[in-house]
Image (cartoon, rainbow, N blue to C red; front, side):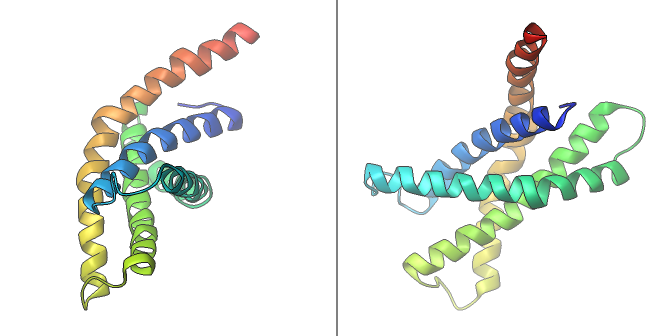
Length: 159
């Protein structure tokens, strides 16, 4: 786990970048937009989406998830806190980013059905089906490994 504010920001940016990248292309694929955007549209959409994602994670979901995890995680082992924190962050990010995606989709293509709640829950369901296992099984362990091998060792060497 990151120990300083700087490490926390570095870890958050790295995790956000990895998760957002996969989810970005997944949602482009789901919405039939993969291959139907210009290169500039894709880059702009990616950069704006990543900035929004990072802001939401750093300002809203991350701090709230840390408070909730410290309250609800079983005491004793650090792994319990990490798993609880990951669960809270995944569900918080999926809730808010699905809402952002729904708003953007509705602006660009109009409402898909008569039920806003049904549309949102469909988007949420699709996103959580990928985001949860992706975070828990692949990105969480991979980013932690990269963070500790690259960032922590780099900082240790500088000292």
